[in-house]
Picture 1 (cartoon, rainbow, N blue to C red):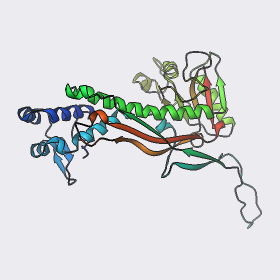
Picture 2 (spheres, rainbow, N blue to C red; picture 1 turned 90 degrees about the horizontal axis):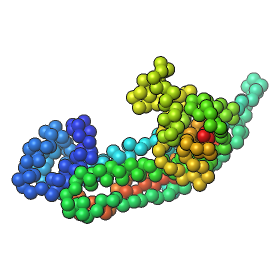
Picture 3 (cartoon, rainbow, N blue to C red; picture 1 turned 120 degrees about the vertical axis):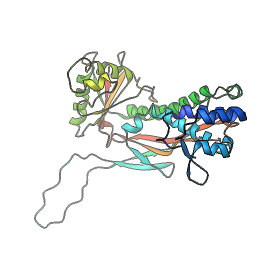
Picture 4 (cartoon, rainbow, N blue to C red; picture 1 turned 45 degrees about the vertical axis):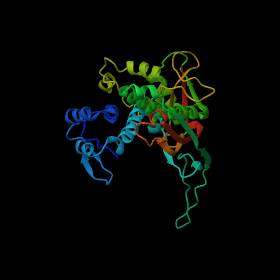
Length: 332
């Protein structure tokens, strides 16, 4: 059952807590909640696929006979995941129907050959590099305990579901960024000076010199803070976005921020000490790709009340670097 997004101003987290409270309420309390805390305009899909008011649905059917709780539990997880979205927006996705796929990568830079009039066009013989994406499975049970259920801590349960979604998304960030750090072949060392926009410009120049068109920038929080300060209290283009908490496109690059650690065994993601890597600049067309076999999903969650403390979130994906010299690390 899917709740409609346009009919209720509350978040999925708030709705989940309210629906859990309804599941444990007595007849009098249920009537009070339906009459005072469920907006008339809040609607959902019933078992037949019809859009009906939630009030009317719950007057005719107990909430544990619907899928309202399961739906809002999942929606709350996705709501939490949206807070951490970064690498899935910064790297192209490949849809996968199996556990492994081969992806071809090649440079666009090159030249066509001159041919005589009416001669057959020669085949493009530029080198193609094939890379394999292997899918791995990531699973975790929620930290919701039976005591939280028994003690009716509905707000905490909903908050934990939201945190669970954020952890799932951070897993994707952790793995993809680590793969890219390990596979990158270029590096700009700022040597402790010119660490903000100037360092980004130098990294962009290194990627461009290899024949690519860099278009994406990923930063750690320290690098984002340092670079963002260059826009504060200035009349530079993008300063208003920085004041509102958003970084503007820099030097033609679309910025993203990843606040997790990474799966890299070689590089430390940060921008506070020598040897830290705080940014990467790359051509998103050929730098890397990630394959998504199964996006964030719920397992072992059928009973809307009893299975809360056994809910498992699962994610299946893999990532691979395409052309390593299309990625430049920026060292502190």
